[in-house]
Image (cartoon, rainbow, N blue to C red; front, side, top):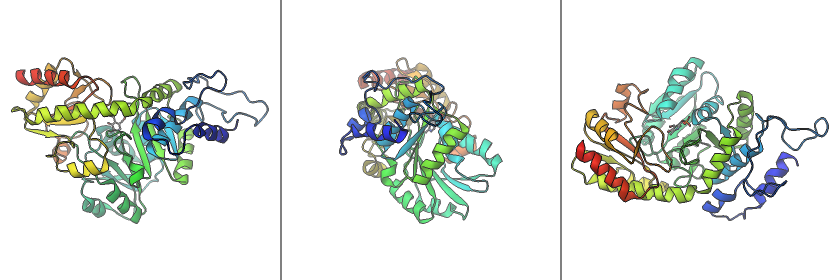
Length: 396
Ligand SMILES: Cc1ncc(COP(=O)(O)O)c(C=O)c1O
């Protein structure tokens, strides 16, 4: 069957008006045609046999196409409301591929509090290729507009940001980007498509570290780019094959398993993070809590408008690096680890872990203090998580 035919028949299984959690479970997948296996197999193959020269089933070489990866790409394209998706070996490989759509001399405006690894890629690698980057607080539209130059080709947004939980108004930003013919990219890793679908607000490209909520089980590293415009789809298809930083069949299979429970997991992540945020907000040793689900968050109204839940990530400030380290070192149930979005609750100290590659003066500028502790709330019973934090804070 030619590849196009396969895509069509796979998508035909879903009714056009299928709801979100149904899409998560079924999009891109149908029983395996040769055995009826309900789960898309791991097609662990490097090549595909052709019946005659040029006569094949839509798959020629596994860097270019793989059925397990294709199923995942169609699944996530549908989940994000895009037309096509392209899976990569990590979130950073996905972001790097997006930047290879640019040309030397182009300028990119970036959310100032972007993920530390993104900042490192832009500043320490891509500047060498004559790309330039300006970091602004994209929650302020005026600052984005002021940073636009004739060479500006891309607006790269993260919302909510990590770890200070600042939001950008996606509709307003996309209107501005459209007016100036700038491609708007949203890193949607933190929110997940359950809570926020940037394409519906006008984004051109959505990128994820699938390592996080999409996989959800802390056992895979991957990335994906979702596109809507035909020219972007052509370009990404070419770049994925040309540069070759593809996702493996096994990782594709793991993430497909993850997206089946994405909606369920996110509901519990939301509940747990809200419970922890409310507990911490009333704790005498906590100076501040950063969680969009708290009415005290300065952008609570925007979060309620733009997101369908407030997410599983929260940050709190205990006033000093020593106190933050104490809390991180004393938790028992929570795991002291980088990363986020898994079923297990993780705790980290951004200044010395995820954001250690961001210079201290930049950290200060974006409001990232040494006293901040970040939690990725898992899906355990929230009472157990609160008890763990209570004992860690009591001893801190
Ligand atoms: C928001 C965000 N984007 C991108 C990445 C990079 O993803 P990966 O670690 O899968 O390369 C991360 C990793 O933590 C992240 O938090």
